Length: 374
Ligand code: GDP
Ligand code: MN
View 1 (cartoon, rainbow, N blue to C red):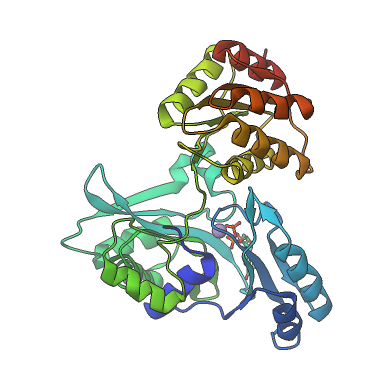
View 2 (cartoon, protein in one colour):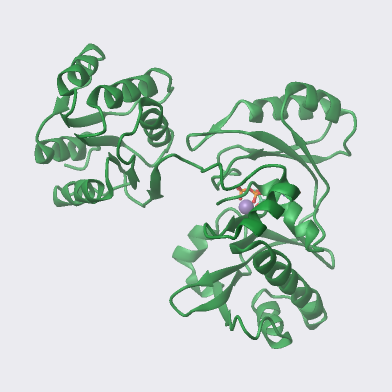
């Protein structure tokens, strides 16, 4: 279960970690009222469960009330990576000297916790991991021993902080671990960026995910703190993993979706994702899935591969057509559609001028060609 930034920060606050002041805005009325109450400058941030908001234009600094109203309403109407913005967070502006990355996660392979950290935090952390991995540091610690001063010493050194910061780093790490991770059964607590602001370390962003197997007691405490049940809301009604290619993939069932990726690769294309809409998906799920890939700038063409069983081909076709009609982005879509209500599905696609295939290999080739890789 992923939490919104403002929720993660609320847990930080409960754990005694100082956070920038925050106000959540859900309506234009909230925006109008807050505009005259906040201190300027103020940061306006889209609340969505996907990352990379900064790069998508979902983080803006307002210098006055006029900018506040303009930006906040813009962000409220945005869709980021296929996800509608739920609310806007107005956060006190932090003066940033340096951006660090700091997270604690469960490392299942070593059965330990891991403090993942970098002195080059911020919106380009993935690029740092790819291009200068020597700036990404890992400090494992034993769950039965917890975080000790020597861990903090090592982390502080890697982050380019001096001796006098070790105490602050230790305090922050312990609160992240004991106060957030253990207390709320989180499997990831990530701060990116952690701002160096004068002599302080300030969490400017928060990403917290809660273990799907958290106990009822934990869930009910989260409900009380957050005012919603995080186990009720999932990011997507489908299984989605973004990859580094450019052919968007939508399939039904994990096996077929993986086979679809293999086919694309066989014809020289690189899959942009794994996206399994599952069995019996209805048109809104297909619609959301197609929208997500349409809005992803890395996706050059989309390959939808559906074997209709419980899933009905007409539902799939309608979902895809609706996504195309309501999206400003135009991309080639290749569909292979067979099974339940196949004829009706094809009629819907034909009417919308979308070509379809019945053979998977032909469709895969067409998709790779449409992506310009053949
Ligand atoms: P993300 O792109 O979804 O990870 O959103 P973040 O909350 O991490 O914000 C993206 C970037 O905006 C940060 O890396 C900062 O560079 C900048 N930013 C966000 N809040 C502040 C702030 O209070 N002060 C300053 N100076 N920059 C900020
Ligand atoms: Mn961030």
